Image 1 (cartoon, rainbow, N blue to C red):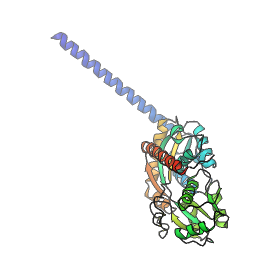
Image 2 (image 1 turned 135 degrees about the horizontal axis):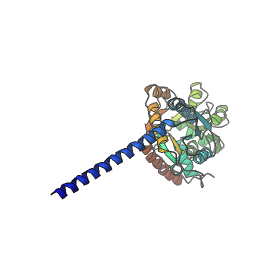
Image 3 (image 1 turned 90 degrees about the vertical axis):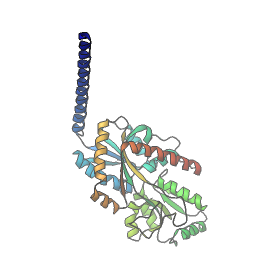
Image 4 (image 1 turned 30 degrees about the vertical axis):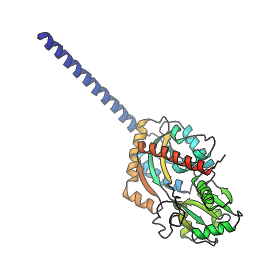
Length: 337
C-alpha cells in the first residue's frame, strides 16, 4: 500500500512539474512575442501600390496609411509602382525583405485578373505573400466624353456599332480590371475598337475628357470630380448596386446587360515570411481604422466602401477571386503579353 501511495505521489508531482514547466514556457514565449510586437516598427514602413498617384487605389491607400502610421508610431510611406497590369509593383513587393517594413496595398481584383491574363506573371498573391486584411471595395462605372451623343446604355451601344470599329477606348492598363471590362463589354455587344492602355486613371482620364478616347471603365472615386464638373458623362455602374453618389445612374444589369457586376476589391498583404506578430498587429490596427464610423463616412463620400476581413478570410477571398477570373478570362479567350 505504501509503495502504491509513493508511486501515486511521485506521478502526481511529476505531472504537476510538467504542467508548471509548460505554463512557464508558454508564458515565456508569449512575453517574447509581445516584446517583439512592442519593438516593431522602429522605422517608417513602405506601402507599395501598383497604380500611380491620383487614382482610386492611391486615394484609398493614403486614406488608410495615415491613421495606420499614427497607430504604429511610424510613417507609412506610399510608393507608387504602376505598369504591366500591376505586375511591376507586385513583383517589387514580393521581392522585398520580409521584415515588416514593406507592405503591399493591393488592388486585389485587378491583380487576380492580371494573374490570369499574363502568360508568365512574375509574382503571385497566393504564393509570394501572406494575407493581412481586406480593406473594402470601390465600384467601377462605364463613362464617356460628353460630346458622345449617348445618354444611356442602349444609345451608347447603337453609337459604338455605327462607328464600325473606328474609335478608341481607354483603360487603366493592359491586364487591368478596366481593360477586361472593356473587352467583355465589346464581346457582349459584338463590336470592336482600338484599345488605348494607360498607367492608371490619372493618365487615362485627361485623354477621355479631351475626346481622344470614346469610353472607359473606371472607378467611381477617380471619375467622380470630373462627372460632377460635367467633363464626363456616366452611362452605367458596373456593380450589383447603384452608388449613393450617383443615384440616378443605373447599373449595367438594370440597363439591360445582365451578369455584368464586379466586386472591385482592395486588400493588404506582406511578403511571405514576414513575422506573424507583424501580420497580427497590422490586422488589428487596420480593423480599428476600417470600423471607425468617421472613417467609413469620409470614404463613402468618395465612393469607397470599407469592409474589413481578417487574414484567414482574405486568404479564402484571394483564392476565390483567382478561380473566378481565371474562368472568365479563359471563357473570353483573352491573353496579354
